[in-house]
Image (cartoon, rainbow, N blue to C red):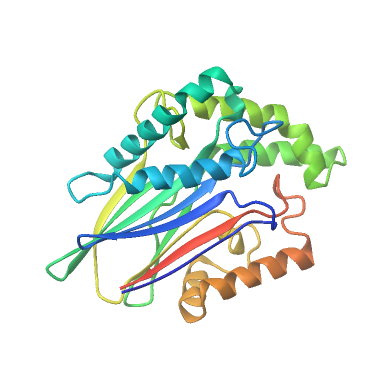
Length: 285
């Protein structure tokens, strides 16, 4: 078994993604967290690190304390968030932040449990990270073919702004800020959150998948910033992205991503942000 992982901010100042790998009692836990860019006017919890970066790191540290073969991934996530909130509640009550400022993140958690020579994968997904499986016969399977319903709304608004002549990422974001804040408030108050948040109002609603792993299988989990190599840039398909990651390295792929963004201006008119934080973990049997 081998594991390659990488994380990189869209610029050198801040990275709201996070990657972690933990090993315990025959189990390997691999996490990719993609913190949603803040839509607040300032940071309220951790001004130096930034609220979103603080959240993905603090959650991961809390989660590590819950890990054990006897506890499910779903229960571990709940326990970690409850632990985090118990330490933060007083601060949030004495220095309240508007609901749109509360940090959220996408989370994909791949657990590989190997017992008696048999490996079983458990995939826990909140939000829009991507997960691909490379079969021993060279096939590629999308393990979590999730389509974010909000994306169509965002794309429609971007198209409307383009028609008005608004084409830069900064201008787009400024015009879309009320919509983005309303969406963030909804995500932080949903009765069954489909995203990782600080104080859920009900049980999380993850997408779960379990399956046995054949020898010579590989799995790639990544943030949507890394997946931009496929969508929207179109430099690879799912299959060729997986093949190239296996042939080269995640660092080489990240270099290619940043080079493309630097020479083409990133997504241009296709997204709110011209470039995004990018993270990935590649597991090989």
